[in-house]
Image (cartoon, rainbow, N blue to C red):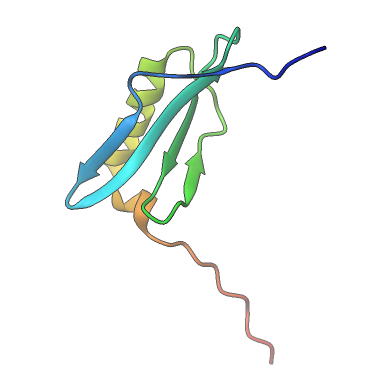
Amino acid sequence: MDRDPNIVRSGLSGRVTKHGLAVEVEIYRLEGHPMWALEVVDHEGGSTVWDEQFKSDEEALAAFRTVIADEGIESFTQRKVIPFPKRP
């Protein structure tokens, strides 16, 4: 009987707080798979997952840090609502 693979969580995962805003950085991979996934979860449970995977957990963390440096932590914590167009 086949079983689902275990998820390996990187030790680089954890809470990051900047300017009083906190997010959870999750870096993980499937057991036996070499590529790492990156997900950032905001205080309301909203999730941002990178489409690309990374060769190492360090590379994934560097991608997260690049976004923080370029766009700020607010890019993960602000609710993004796309309004429907109003009907005439």
